[in-house]
Image 1 (cartoon, rainbow, N blue to C red):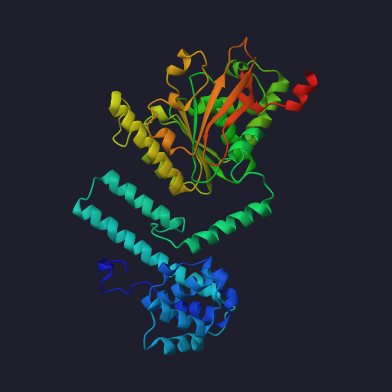
Image 2 (cartoon, rainbow, N blue to C red):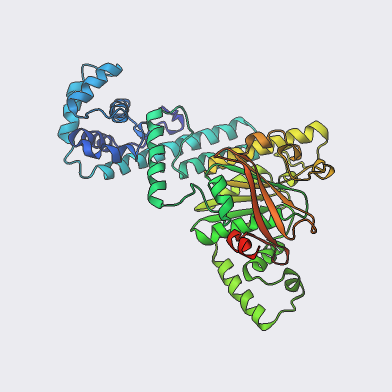
Length: 448
């Protein structure tokens, strides 16, 4: 039980009647048990006795056992939580519960009281940190934001959880995927061949897109960000540490309107191009695409800002080597710089898990790749690679051959893929519109 010393003299938020009604409903009508198990957890019960009975019913549900007053009492004996008052208390639960029809309303009350207790607990901890001087103001603020964000998302600090509980969530994901009819599990990148290989951009995944300068990694990332923002109701956060927000907007509107980016910079446009530009601006403006071009951001800064974005679906960071460490430093030498980049890589993976969204981060490749005869990206080419390769769920390498080699055909090389195979995806690169597209293989074969 949490320490509520700061609330001495005040009543700790809870509702015993609602807790008893939840338990009584499950004992009266076992058909409501699945709904209750999907909506509330044992830790949200204030009373130790009520929590133990709920945990007993939960364990029986996980093993598909019959749930009624007699079987629950028997299971309580097996679990060692039965005492002389247990029989009488179960009878009391049955007597005070008017109907199981309103069980989800009772659940709502219990969860609200649990949320108030969690808020009080977080407030006390934060106040203690501030008074005791545990860390500086930035660290305390970061802790406070994490605690509040976890509560807002309906998650307390995670601990050990029974496999049976986890499996229920897995089965729900499988059923949801089957009902959706989609062939991928994550967000679509807008590039069909890439989606099929990596199964889209999946929640809590860290995806690294690596290339040498000037190859088009920013353009590809923007293409993906805009596609997600346009085709879903989700918000997409883009952190650009190199280019200004105006430059990014220029690229986005060029790729959306198919108006040459050079002409956009000069403003020398035909009436038809102005019309396409206007339509593109309207479409882009309606998308929930958020851009921050502050070059001095750290992972902690980005994480804090993302927690305030409602309905967040994707985070894009351009790019890793320009990011600041938590200490506000970007320039390190030798091993120190490698360690700092490795730390930031780990923090980004943690951010992806905390926010429960995919994080797409761009990264530079080392010069070693251009010294080889085969200049195509390899995992070892990641600059200050260290933990980047280890932390990433997916690593993509972008490669543009010489003009004489293949005109405007790029290779997106899947170098690492925790969800499946690796391989090479061919993309059409349209530099005048700063955009990538899937190559129409059927059309290409007919032409050939």
